[in-house]
Length: 306
Image 1 (cartoon, one colour):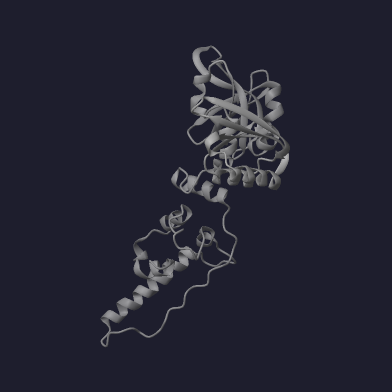
Image 2 (image 1 turned 180 degrees about the horizontal axis):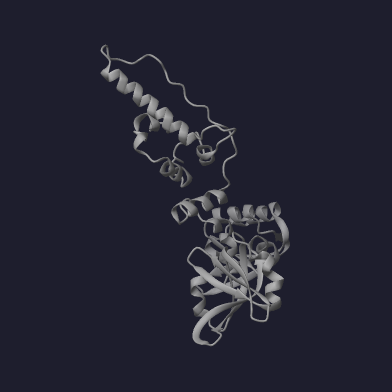
């Protein structure tokens, strides 16, 4: 199909349930038609019909004209061109809103994941995924995710406590917080919030052998990089250390200055030797633009230090 109107011309929309059509649009099925975005398919303004409704009527009119021509004594087209409906101009959904709608409509994310924007924080500052905590029995760990459920309840003595769930790329994890710790952090326990949770993996009360994460600190995931970044370590093999690479790293350090140390580790794999150097001239800020530049450099690896 050339566009969504060509689709409406050629598909019998009388056989399509309107709600099904709307669900398809909300899930991104019509994103292939670049002229319009998802919000325009659903938006109604000043009592007007949505684009979905206009498409159905437009397609039906086209097909009625075609059917009328086929049974006409003289055949041929009527000569009357059906005008395209007017489409309201509005701001598209944000990426996060699109993902939320996808989850509501089909039960899972299609075009991405809400945590995609925090992949770097999860990779460098988290100990493990939420479905892997039993491999850290008795240890203090850090996980991250999006809050999917939250309930506040009261104990028998009237003290509030919180039950909540976080979900990462792999799975979801049910957590509970009590006492002063809960009162300190409950303002962050909002469904849809992106959280960084530190805690200890302990045996559940009166359930030996059942391990759970007992949180003792919660922070906004969006603040973790600035709060916890202490340095950036770049790893390069000696045989890949060229003058061009050194000049590029110096240029990036000038472009993205900040409070974090810059370390360069040079390794000779053949001799099984490694030298760590600390730059006294350059300090950097591990912002998204710097990370994108480092990702484009071949033959190096890097880590954000905390």
